Length: 275
Image (tube, rainbow, N blue to C red; front, side):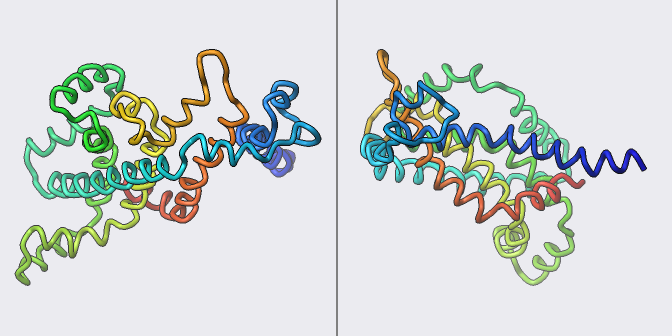
């Protein structure tokens, strides 16, 4: 009886404390985005009132970010990379599941092992190679995202496809479908839950990525939002009020995308983990 009472009282308290802990960075970012630089330095945790209240931060950050152009750069790279990853990863995982051979098992193990390789260990050789191939541009960046995003995507698709009955493909083949038609008309529509999960995971990672675009993109007109954010932090001054306002602006599109698709995340990950 005592244990059940402690659970009823303790769990809500613990949940509330964890919620406060995880939401506190968002509170700090949002409240300080409405303050002047001096207001931030005086008290980070206070609400933006009085002479330190500065709603104009958003308009100035929007202008300095060249938000329209950088937004479409980020959108183009994120959407293109995510779609290409979905196409290649889903087809590769399907063939690995349906092809029973040592080569198929080896390739799956190879993709899984690639997740253990830190990006920093291949960063400089990769950039040197892409430079020789004249691919230090958004197209080369999308190609590299395909390579780095395929491993996790293939693993998720691989586990999900194992639950799809092979009889569906055999019936479609008897009806005259070739492999291409079997995949796109029979298999791919059934992959919707895991496809949404893969798209969310990759879109959030690519949208927020800073290091790889910084290494690859060398023209200002190609800069994404994370790269533009870097210009708020100069050698001699840091414009925290504008950086935080820009950060809120940059988060809005991906938050909207996440809320529209969040119901598929748990289902997709759970189904994809079942063997």
